[in-house]
Structures are given as C-alpha cells and as structure tokens.
Amino acid sequence: MVQTNTILDLQSDEALCFFLDSKHYYKETFPSYINFNKILSAINNFLSNHPDILKHVHPENYENVNYIIASNKDGKYDWRPFELINPILYVQLVRTITEETHWQDICNRFKDFAANPDIECMSIPVVENTLQTNQKAQILAWWENIEHRSIELSLDYEYLIETDITNCYGALYTHSIAWALHTKDRAKQQRRENLIGNIIDKYIRAMRYGQTNGIPQGSVLMDFIAEMVLGYIDTLLSDRIKANNIIDYHILRYRDDYKIFVNNPHIGERILKIITEVLAEFGMKPNTLKTNTYDNIILHAIKKDKIAWLIKKQSNKDLQKHLLLIYKHALEYPHAGSLITPLQDCYFRIKKGKRLQNHSKSLIAIIVDIAYRNPRTYAICAAMLSILLTQLSNKDEQKEIITKIKNKFNLIPNTSNMFIWLQRISLFFKFDIDYDDALCRLIDHAFKEIDRVSLADADINQIWNMDWVSSEELKNILKANGIINKTEFKKLSREILLKEIESSLIRNY
Image (cartoon, rainbow, N blue to C red):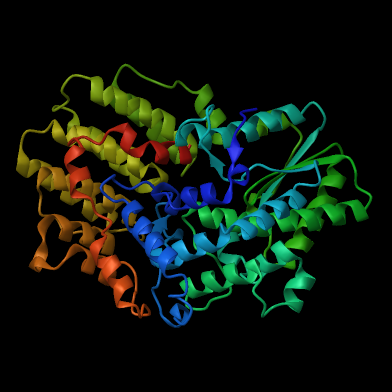
C-alpha cells in the first residue's frame, strides 16, 4: 500500500496553513488565474488582529452567503451543488478548528473512531510528504490503497458487499457534528455550551441560511468535517456488530462508500442491515441502486468500467478512430473515471501530431459530445479543444465553433465548470463571448474592466452576499483583495496544458 501522511499528523499551526491553501479551499479545478490565496490570507491576518469582530453578526439571516456552482453529474438533469464557502466564515471556522486545544481534541477523537481495526477509514485528507510530493500522487494513493487492500482481502474473504450513502453531504444533519465529537448524550446535555462541535455546527448553518440539513461540498475542510460524523458512525457500527456477535468480517470505508468483506453472505446482509439502522439515526440511508453482493472479490476490487477499458483495444493509428473507441466506451460506461486516461492519451496525440486542419472539425465534434455526456471530462476535453482550435487559421471559424459549443452546453443545466474552461479558451482568442455564469461574468469584468468598477466590488456583488458584514475595515480588506490574477493569466499559453488541469484528471480517475 502507498504510505501517506494525513492531516491528523499535522500540528495545529500546520493544519491552519493547510486549510487556508486555495487548492484545499475549493477542490475543483479552475484556470490558474482564479486563486483564493490572497483573499484568504488577508482575512486571516485581519481576524488574527480582531478576534471578536464576528461576535455580533448574523449571516444565518441572509441568503446566498456561499456561492453555489451547480455541477452537472450525468450530462442530463442530475447535478451536485458545489459551494465556494464565504471566505470570511471559512477562515474563521478554520481558525477555530485549528486552535491548539480544539485541534488536539479533534485528533484524539479520530483515534477513537479508528479503534476497531476491522473497520478501516481510507479517506482522511492527505498531506504532502517526502514520498508523496504532489496532489496527483496523494489522491492516487487513496484509490491505490483501496484497490490494493481490497485485492489483499480476497485471501481472507470470499464475498464482497458494496453500498454507499444516498446524498451523504446533502443529508448530513449539522447537529450530529457535535454528537460525533462529544457523543450524542453530552452534545444534547451541553447544547448551548461552547463545545467545538457546536461551534462548527453554528458556522455551517451560518453559511446556509440557518439550515440544519446538509453541509457545503467542494472543500477539503468539509470533507474532514464529514469524516467526523462518518467516523462516529463507524464506532456505532462497530459496537452494534460486536453486540450481534459478528466477528468474521472486514470493512473498508472511503467517505460514504462501504466495502464489506465476509465469508458468509448472510453475515454480510446482517452487517448491511446494521449499517442501515445506524444511518437511519442520522437521517441517512444506503443507496439501494448501488448495493451489490459479489462472490469474486478480485474482479470487483477494481471498477467495472476500468477493467472493461483494460481489455479493449486501447488505441488506433487513426486518431479519429481512437476517439470513436473512447466515445463508444463512454456510452457503455457513462460518467466513468476510466475515460480520463485514454482521453489524456489522445491529448498527447493531438498535441504531438501533425497539423490536423482536415480533420479538426470532426475531432472537435467527437470531443464535444464526449464532454456533453460525461461532465467529469470537461477539463481534459477543453484542453484538447484548445489545441484543435489553435490549429484552425480562420478566426471567424474559431469563434463560430466556440459559440456552437457554448450553445450546445446551454441545452443542459448546471454546466458552469464547462463554461469556465470555454471562457479560458475564448480569452486567449480575444473573442467577445458572453457566458451566463456569475463567476464567468466576474472573470470577464476583470479582463475588460467594465464600467471601471473595481474588481473587488464585483467579487462582493457577484459571488458572495456580504450584506451581513458590519465592519467597514473588513469590507475594505475584501475590496483590496480579489480572486482574479491577470498576471497569472499572462503566464499561460493559448493551449491548455495538462499541468493546469492535473488535479482534475486524477480526481476524476
């Protein structure tokens, strides 16, 4: 197994720096000219000098305190709400969690969650170390550990049962965070006291108009907070399994995905029943559509779509036929992670190949349809499109094609991420194309300086509702620190390079 350090290995000050990194604040891949380090650092410095500035504000009374980026899941009508957490509330929550005593209490609690060696959590956020020096290696380690550990367990077990939690982040009850960190009884008895679990609960509700159901998706911080609740569920599950005298089993959990290894399928069903009962106490339930039992662990340790691609003819001398092969695989396994590697191979073929003017339009059409049906491929498909469009010499033709792509994606909802990458292409071609997305409008404003309004004002007005902020000094801090870096834009090439989208490639693998 790949060895990694997790955030639980960090000291409190190290954890603070970790969470305040832009790539951990929001995990989805943006063009590099969108960066949150400056604004997060400025807010942190201000709050360190004004620790009581937020005591008497009530963001929970305001809508749109966070900015929602609706992300299409299936190329149709299924979607997931990713959120850019209000940076003021985000920084304050990070500062509170990483206070030395709070951080130590949280780390100790996670030791309790891991007390049963037969229930392994594989999804504690990882950090860079000497062995894993980049984000790609870290994220890959998660999946390698799961796949390899599953195969190893085939030596001891005959059956595998898989399930996951339906809409885990959306269903998570915020009060259960305090249950997780302090036990349910203590949390209920000391509901109004200054327990760290209650504070976390308070800040999450403040971000989401006072709602108690659901936590924001899209940041490593919220992944970590979800692990608090899921870890507590692990302990309850462990206790119930022990109470039922079940001993011959092993469970791997990656976030809300469970792999249950047993030698008797009836035992597996009993464990699944216990999981269902425990989840019900938290307002959650297993996804019956994703619950399956297998009698071949090795075959199902690796995702079905990945195996299917491995046994297919994986390339073709003809680039168009190669893309059509990938397209067919995408139709058979929609929204599959196994699309990423072959698309990356095609990227290199397009980039290294001879000029492709005679076939560019047909290649573009295939790539666009792959992206249209498989949202997790947006970034890599945009990268290939940027190369092919560059190879067209006619500017009018280039603009016409980008406009056609934009109009095609307008036919399906929640495609903000694709528009952000199309805009990345449009900016370099200097095409005046409007994208109906607040973040895209902000970017457009930054580069066109519309009406000479300050960029930071646009940040506030278009992205986060800051009407609840009473401090003029803090408002000025926000005005002085934007999230669009035009200097970084100048460093980029017209073609989208893989290093720009690397984290997206491995996360969607």
